[in-house]
Amino acid sequence: MDVIERIDQQVKGHPAVIYMKGTPQMPQCGFSMRASQALGDTGVPFAYVNVLQDPEIFENLPRYADWPTFPQIYIDGELVGGCDITLELAASGELKTMMESAASKQEQAAS
Image 1 (cartoon, rainbow, N blue to C red):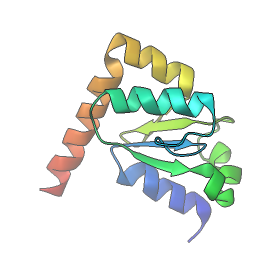
Image 2 (cartoon, helix red, strand yellow):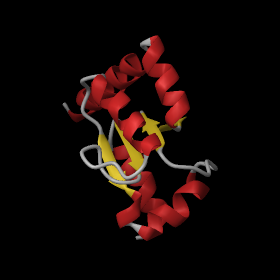
Image 3 (spheres, rainbow, N blue to C red):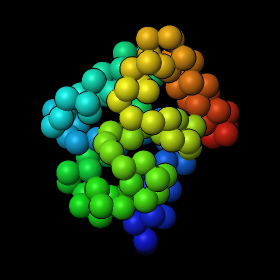
Image 4 (spheres, rainbow, N blue to C red):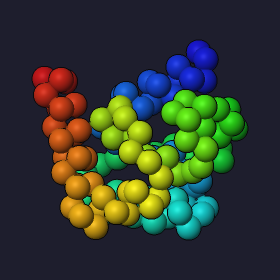
């Protein structure tokens, strides 16, 4: 499978996914740490991909949505942005609403 197809399946297969350096439990960069904490603070489960362990994704993800930096957060199949945007959405309460809505859509589609 082509790496862009793999990314597309990950983005569309999860209500929320963060492409980050490291893992939520062991982040390898401050931006990834803050963004994953903001996602975790919503209480809504999310997926993650450690781009440091997948060189193909690390190299090609910036082409997928034309976003050059990490982390990258996708909710409901759409790029939300990076750390700063995620923190702004969390501060306003929008992040939790977006994640709950995406999780609800996936649950309805599965039943």
